[in-house]
Image (tube, rainbow, N blue to C red; front, side, top):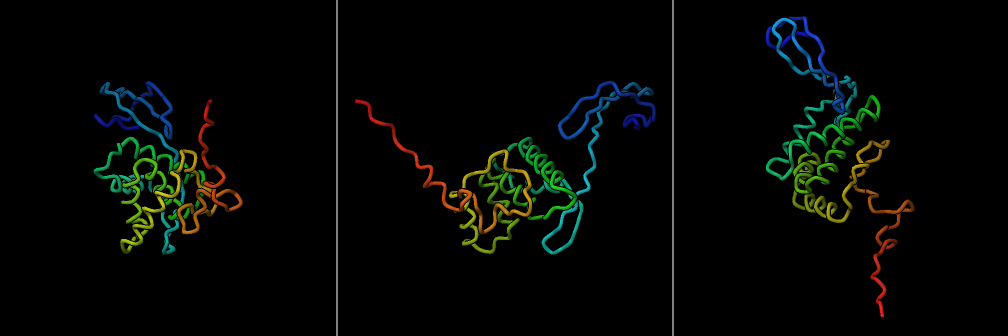
Length: 191
């Protein structure tokens, strides 16, 4: 490891800690005495298959950039976006060596919907390449009608497309609407 201050190759590790998706190491240069921090992350070799058939390596920075553009001037903090990006990257790496771009887009859209529905709509307008106001209205209607995803719903599950036209959000395992099965009843009046 080269010291960023003097370029010396002689450094020692002073402290090591877990940083979630990385190992954080505090180092001290034996040449100039300055301290600096390094992060070690496992290299993910996940290939993303695009809509047009192209294949490219998964890039977490590209994902975070897209999330930041969608949430621009919205009440969403950088920390929330970085956390969402990290959870999507973790789900992608757990999904195996190859993933469809549409799955990553769906995870990003669902995660943004949980943080800020307007940011999710902005993301969807680009990601889904909405052509007119009718398509935009359909996305808005879907956000209003379907429940927002929970934190445990960011994992990739096979080839499912949770945001597709035949979405099963809100349906029981038999395909019937859950709203009829879980109608809320009022309290019994007390005498």
